[in-house]
View 1 (cartoon, one colour):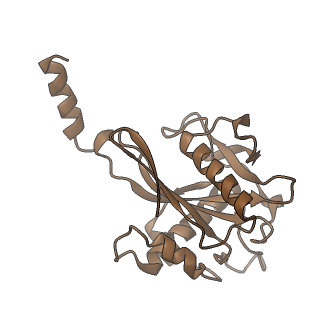
View 2 (cartoon, rainbow, N blue to C red):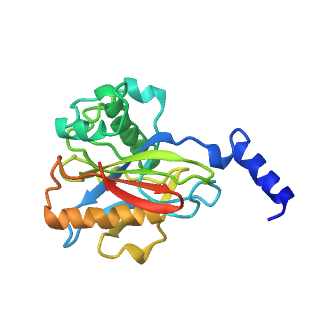
Length: 234
């Protein structure tokens, strides 16, 4: 590498807003599990080719947490064990309300991207107040440095039947299309980001160990350090 090349690389590294300096944004995803089949299936949708982040790959519904998520209504709160897990490796200022905002972000994104809601819709004129009580916290993953977008993402999971989800409301959106119910035993049927495939495989192992997916199950964090993929228990 020439001195000029080193200088250019340093400029890119120190340039405000460059991918190498992006700070991960808080985000959340929801894994819907259909256990009515011989083996568990999870819902994924394809991101459009125009997306800068993970184009044309199949992902779980989800997205960035917004400030408004802290004030969204809900009918029932998270299980206390889930709150405790969410607060691990987090600053004390996050608190239970911050943990709840992540779950509400996942449910808001689910509705925006798929049309699906957790809990029954009482009437057209009754505001949607999602039920958070069936959500499990199953994984946390931070996008590696150098990506065009970086997220500190929490993955929640719930069973379709337990959460009273009406799958007849499933519809495509600008964010996700071509929905598939992916068999956890056949993950190669669609192109997945590596982290989604890893989390899906770990979810399969957890369900094999205990099909009820207990609320206090071990949660793993997935990060990268010095170019190496790391998996650790929260």
